[in-house]
Length: 629
Image (tube, rainbow, N blue to C red; front, side, top):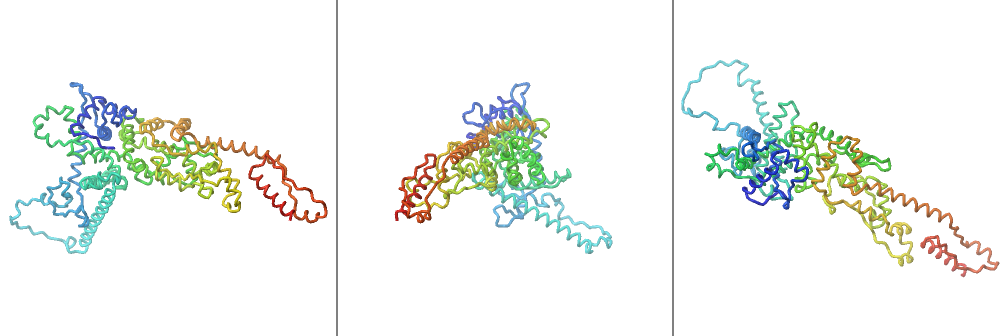
């Protein structure tokens, strides 16, 4: 999935090859969008996801050197981001000492501060008053303190100052309580990260601690930034941990331990600073692993934090999503409403299910292995492919996201409409698709549709299909006991038993196909991203045809037309069929003196159904027996 086989030197060689083929950040991103450069073992060129993500999110420029004609990485932005995190390490410590003493992350406040870089020692960086910062060189020197007069107002034992001290202690306690709450929430989320890959975090204490430190410092840093901008503080919100973990996992794949190179290259560093090999080593330096993850995470979150992590932002983005979905899958008629209208009629508000799609950037719905490939396209498009009026700072991956989600929803469109449209559900029942073991109609409802949206089916084995085709008795068993079959009129059971010519077509359309190619997905999303509403109306049917295996309404209309023709045919037959005439018992008794007419076999009308003829024959036989008695 995310792992690449090879040594750190292989990573360096791989990136060298990639940069020689795509010697600029825009060319690398464009190759991703066009499908020329994708992760594949059989691909002509090697692939480096860390190179794509880091250069795009941190806006690290790549260019051809005028002297050597080789690619050169401008590391100025990267170094600036690393310096920012170094400052945060000094300013924002992790309050491990506030945790319960039985916590595996607990560390006392007297821990050696020299262990702050050793992750296994559970470092304590946030001691409010570090002894190393105190001037204690003249500790044993006695000094006479000058006398100072103190007014009553400044009396340390006055009531006012007592209240002031009390307020100070109260604020300190509130701060500690807030810090421990944030830390505990982050720990709880990190402990559950990616259970399908337990070796990544759940079973790795070191990785969990690094993640906790990054997220805790981010929660403090983002509040300071927003406070300076006059914005509402957000801090840490559940869901951020998964986004950060994806970046963490990607960057961790390609790291280079440059500590062994420090001594050997120290003297020659100035002479080799422009050397591509040395630049890549600095680019992948493992000692800046947390620095780079933090920087990439902050850049990823910058344009989406207000959109996806505030309630008002989710509402705005949901409205935008609904409008675009409505134009792509617009209403044909009141009988055949589009998907957006159907969801609205069922009172399924988009923000009920879109919140997780937006906040998790598809990782929860699609799984880590598939979603990182979608992220490739989102990040690449934010870098070079988006229109100038829709992108801010070149790293807004939310530009393409709504359109990717729309295409994914079109993949399950037929199934959703089956749940939301009773007309479709009724026709499915008529052709033998929807039904329970008793042959009764088993209608889908709004809860099934919402469940599909909240638990997106990745493959056909995860769908919520409840299609049942009960086996009915054969013809020889029908005559024995007609009264036992009271669950459903026999004539309808027999008609449902017959294979409808449309059943297989409808079943195939309702089957949820495998996930589309990630390249097709973000390529199509990029295509429709810049279209106007009227252009989306025109382009919508082709998208439905591609991702939904056709428009289910088109097939439903054909079935309805066929059923209508059949009904007209049978109505004409019934009109031409003579009424049944049977001799009543009263008439037979009153006319007993008359010579009875010889009974004869009732002529069978060839236009009647076989079941009606058999019922008619049985009635005739009973009447014959009664007259003979």
